Length: 222
Image 1 (cartoon, rainbow, N blue to C red):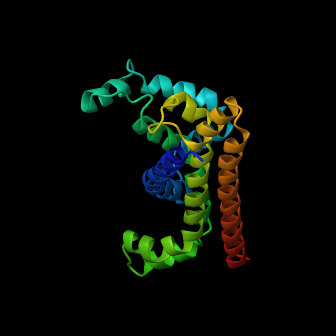
Image 2 (tube, rainbow, N blue to C red):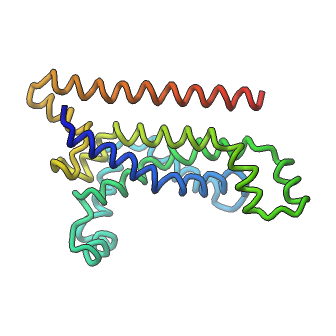
Image 3 (cartoon, rainbow, N blue to C red):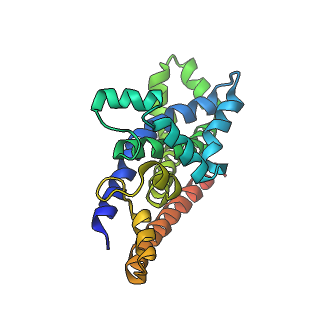
């Protein structure tokens, strides 16, 4: 078992979750309750990582993070390091490719909040932020938890984008999925099997949690 790669994967998943979940709540609610020009385009951009091949997405992210790109040059001027093939670049790429896994469940959860509940809060003179905290957020929490679980699990298993953007640098960008590939290349079936089984258990736990939350939401709105 490559514990360094395992720890790095957990750190990447936790960091992605911490950055992406607030973004998912803001964007998901906006798409759920507001009607504006370009809403369809925003939804398409959010869903794009679901249909784009990971290697293609990783290629464009690598170009965007490269030393010749404005973003790469800006990061290098701040830190003196390259954004590509670094943990920070890997974290940013992970946030972008996990957008649909965070935004879409949260959007569905806010869409399920009855409109008359929002209208009743407004008629009572409740400020929007208080209505959001006291009414909408508690009603939408199963979707938020589902988004968190899916985002974390997908981050742990991502391979193509991680390899393209982060490479395979031990203790810096070598995640568990890359370590499994390395073990198979070295004909170490036992080592690859142990790490693959770890990811399998995590995926099963994720599905169990997601299904339980979905059933709970379904009973609530039945």
